[in-house]
Length: 83
Image (cartoon, rainbow, N blue to C red):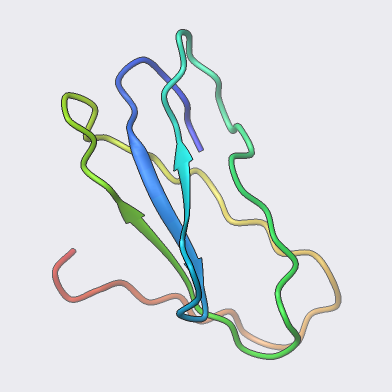
């Protein structure tokens, strides 16, 4: 994710589990910073990234999701209806 002076916090949860909060604020720009990583279980997983709307720093940028390991088929990506 992009980290910068105007970036806020996000929560990241996998398969409905407990969310982890990441802070994308930084005193200077950091491009493509790894802010979270996890080992996912085999099979289909759902990863939810939610903007927490940090006061005066409401912006977050998701640059990429990187999956490693053997391919298992197509990667379906869906967005909430309210995006």
